[in-house]
Image 1: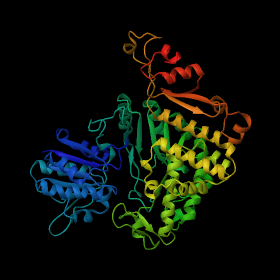
Image 2: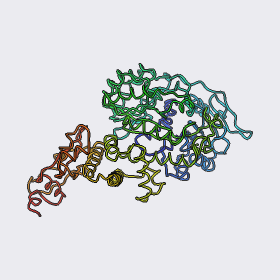
Image 3: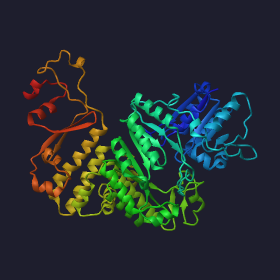
Length: 597
């Protein structure tokens, strides 16, 4: 009996790890794990192809985690499988299935739904199938019947101590190339109205398991881990202990963490500063009166102070903001965005409100006049305080921010550009969106699909827009310094994120004559022209375009960028060395390059 787990991920990335499927497979008896297959699918793959891939395995059981982004596609897959493999049992789980088991079962696709955490329920279901037991309404299981859905009793959440690690059991593989999803706790004690998971006690996994997983990640060369813990720093002592373990057993593992600012303190900030990490703070809005509608709270002064703790330790951090919250409007979202940008986050995640069935907000939607799509992903269409037109304005502002600030890696120079153009952050980003869709003729659909833009294209857009803004402001004299600033940060970031530049292997140099053999530069090498001497710009603690223009002459330079280990090298090149590097095309020797051959 083969068991297939089919996961349709939200996108192809290092985070595309089938953790839910891995946890379910790891919970099965050891003799059954060898009979499981974990299959990954991605957006763009049509239901027919996915169904054919699964049908080719002729599994006895197919398990599908359903999320808001994949419900319609994977339901269509299940309908096709039901026709192609009438003897195969099709079981759905995940947030969508748990929130709406009757709806999932009503459309003649899945035979059963696992509600809530599924390890114990699925293991019991598989045990019954293995001995030929008929399908029954087990605790945590809902069944499709001719008379309608039948729901077994709710099942209590499992004690994390009894669950098998998908990493330590070998169900999931940690590699140097990919990232890992690391589950350190389940549950969330904060009852935010828009979320499925709130209002339950935090259940931490045993420290012995966490240590073993950290050691496992280190042995297998994993470079980064997304920590699946809704608030890793609550209570604060648990967060500090987690960072201490990471520092001791995986000091080079980059952790991506979710946190609440009010539970940060100076000792925790110091620990964060010592571990490679980035931390995301769930801000959602800068307006306490808006947050009260969804049972969240905020002390803006305290929040700013906690962020300064992170800044003081050099911690990379970002914020989450939601537009369309009950009681909020366009100006409210714009002012939240402006307040967030003043704190210079490294990244801003900007989300439209989703009114998820099964959440308290869904039950209260009439109270706030929330009009949302009835089908996944349940995005807001309008509210009592936000018209459809203003929601669209929010969407464009969020996309412009994502494109210019996030993907454009603008944190280091954004305040400088605002000062040079004499504008505020929101006006600047609104103007950028208008310039893109107006002067540049970019379709709004392309602006809203920001992931389509390549880094080099984004740099060109930034240079073009800022040049336009400076000319309109009468400051064309700042253009050379502005261009240098944008280029420096772009190429530095590309070097950080790109492959390491390594010396040629000894065998590649065997028989190589220094002066007469052809030379070729490494493909990772970057030669970048600047208007100013790049070494002068690097000496400035804080970039200031006025200061650059006043202190330095635009004498020109060409810089070399490359990465060795964790260090990015940026060197200004002498004319002879530049001539050599530009001529190393794999066809000419240094002698021929300098001879002009």
